[in-house]
Image 1 (cartoon, rainbow, N blue to C red):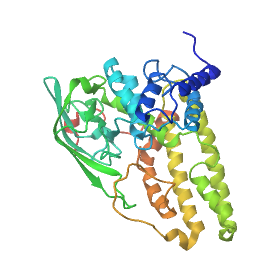
Image 2 (tube, rainbow, N blue to C red; image 1 turned 60 degrees about the horizontal axis):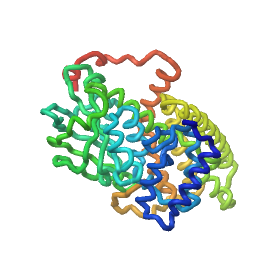
Image 3 (tube, rainbow, N blue to C red; image 1 turned 135 degrees about the vertical axis):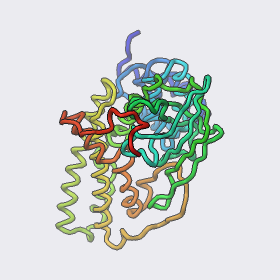
Image 4 (cartoon, rainbow, N blue to C red; image 1 turned 90 degrees about the vertical axis):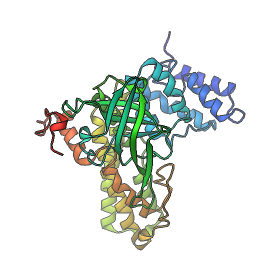
Length: 395
């Protein structure tokens, strides 16, 4: 088969829109048809939402559909599914798993969350204690997960559990796809500094997961989880944006519209952060070009580090620029939102919410280690428990 180029791809999009007018087509049927036509993830294989093309073509396809008024696939709610679960399932799943999960994930029929971190295994994820014990064709899972974004909306979860405590901590893990409606799962809200509860803690008590929902081999969980985490860091920090997208755009707009707030010191700070933001944007474009030719690597950790630093500095600069107006906080009502509405809220919300950017998706301290060891090739940090059986590690 001849691989379509940009012009032929644009023609396919046009033909699809002519056959499925967005204003006249049921939204779910439109999304299912778009997936089946290979116009969901154009870089994915044929028959699995894509056409085997370059990732670089995706932005133009999405823009064409958005301009035509095509329905959204709940991307604002399903970031974990689209950015983390889907590429991991594609890389490690069986044909049956890929066929079962990718289509309803992309159409937004099934929302996903991530059951990785635990009260005693945040930065050191490999130290997790949630156990999965084989029982015939099932695995019985018991444990606790925490800081789980969107678990209150999710139908499915990606889950890492310990299947062999006699092996060193990195080797005794296995990766599962967990049905969040199963008996034994209890999702409880965690209220954050913003007042909202977008995070949750999840308790699992005797949850039965069929072995057909195991992703990858038994004991391969650390490798599969690392693929997910690389995708997560790229999704958080590696988005190739337009100039002055994100927080730099918010602050720059306030600077232009409120000249009475300007001071020389704030001008200096803004210019420095504008340059830093532009460097990060161009670097994200380069990372996107690399992703177009393969799997995400540890470079995404550097982008996520940069994203967290810039978001926190810029949200702080916004408060300083607004002076007493920045101290107002519109609403501290306890709600369980569908998404993080970062730019639809006030400056106080942005300042508080940005504090989590250096924790979620891997703490900045851990990401610095990843950059040092896996990108720069520096000697690894000494780890005394690396080769000990997990059950013998002091806890």
